[in-house]
Length: 141
Figure 1 (cartoon, rainbow, N blue to C red):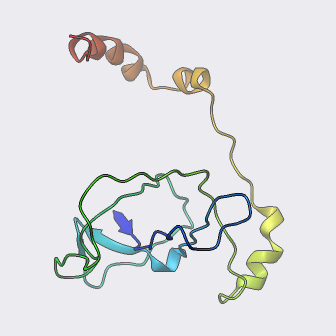
Figure 2: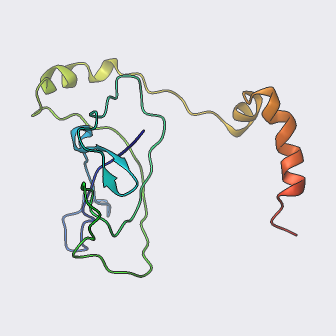
Figure 3: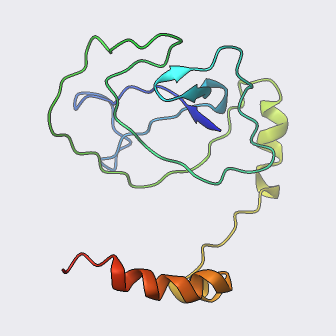
């Protein structure tokens, strides 16, 4: 299942954090179930209780809606986005936000794996097949 949320890129005139970076906050409630550029009617809301396993950023000329429609302000061409970090935030104004804020210290953030640890934890079929695949799919040819 794929969920998307629309967000506006801040302009250069928007307020910075004091360190030269701008913050964009997208509440989980804003994410909608989609299929391609179309919103799934009556789609289930995003449930984060089991964890989030992948996050991506996309630039699209389409609005998230039940019909395929282009953004009125879309401009084709090259663009660059620099991301310093992606994280979670607590919304104390949301229902249950005060409890979430109080339990913020109870959240355990998993450590990321090193490249060596990641290679060691690969399933055996991948350990055997990836070297063979690299022989046939080689960009240096």
